[in-house]
Length: 305
Image (cartoon, rainbow, N blue to C red; front, side, top):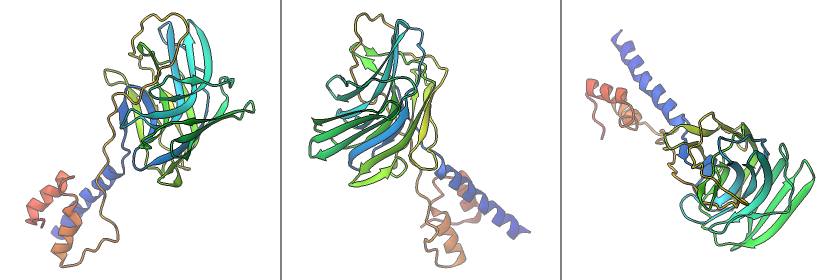
């Protein structure tokens, strides 16, 4: 009876630790929601989305932007391209654009409408030379340009953003849900999906910590997800703006990455030795993560070496 009870107690912390290590790791920021990959060198990024039909917030101006990009997380460089909706005094204006920080955005001659299916990609052709491509598969329009830009190649992003102008962040509009698909990047010379890039989800939060926009888990293809606007009120300044609005981009603001759980021991890891030694090997990686395991070690008198 005592042996059975002992084995049952040992099984419990194994279950808890596996659940903790497999849980999603979510970062937060004040102006981005989506997925961000930060491990490796990125020379291309792309994805598709359906342009949302937004409604305004309680301000004379509100906006949202959807884009893919490279850089902007760990440094001040960012090359990005996408679409945005600006609602000013009740009128919506949809545009397509690209931006090379620290410069302001460049609007491209491509008509954008709500519910259009857009595909956008950014790819380095050679060192410092980039090709930016847009395709509206709903209308059949496309646009392509080549630009020069010095990038750190330090991250890749698939983002729904609270835009900014010369006076600061613009109140976030109510876009509902944006659906991303076909997300990919070229990481260290190989094309990978969002999942394959090791990207982490990022939730946009207000100044008081409420979620403004939340990403879903990745789809089974590892390349698709949704970003959903919550009912929280945007806390961006609601100052009066007059005249033509001009987007002035910034990198991620207030970013806190999600914590990555410690790796679990491999199933093929050797656990040779006597039975007490095998138990020490098995639970050695859990002692710092699970108080139950610590209690068991104290009760049965094992010491990790």
